[in-house]
Image (cartoon, rainbow, N blue to C red; front, side, top):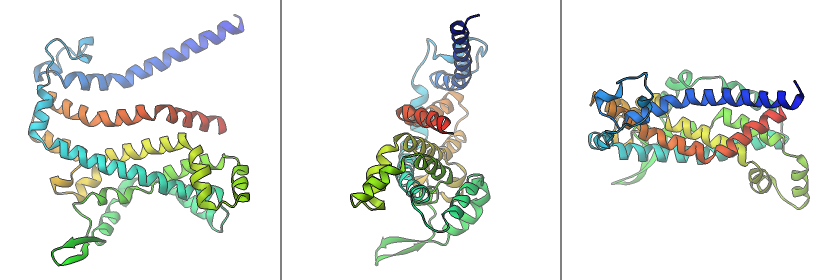
Length: 294
């Protein structure tokens, strides 16, 4: 077998494996979206047939009308959107600034800080959840009351308690550090010769050349903020500040209709898919670049 034919067969086999894996991961989503347009009796009917993964001839929007009627879904969506957007914007800048200091600046103790960042990557949130809960219960927050400006002790039942603790992300910091480290140092030196300081180098040299890693960090931060479940249950008791993930548990307690539950799940899944598709090209470029450099 000649080399071109062997290469073609290898590519065809790789493409078939990737298509098969893509189908495996897409089938649950297809089932969820299809079930959201069906009645309860048709959701689990004939699961072995391909029609399970398409809406079918009797599809309707009744389930979607029901979820907006039975729950405060628009408010939950707005809360999650605010939390996720603020976490992404603040997280990209905060984590990239720390990574810039670690990768592009020379100062005593930076290797120790980098070691702490790497160690924090493997620490699950459940380990720090209770200490963090105790901390935010005693932190002040500025408010304006009838008597004028003042402070309220405790961050419970608010949006900022769902944002601030998750802005700093060790994994995102490490991603930025790895990417910044591979940007040629000559760019910094040329900018410094023109009188640029660290802040100018960060804003005008490093960040404009870091689109792929920014997109990757944005996806990670957005998915993490959008899928918050344990933390909101611990700190949010009011529906006014409840995000979508605890909201689906509340909705599940109000109905036994699987079609409506699938409709709710479909609505809260669409923003995640939209964000990934929007940054897909940069995300793939970041992963490919990391693999080549590694």
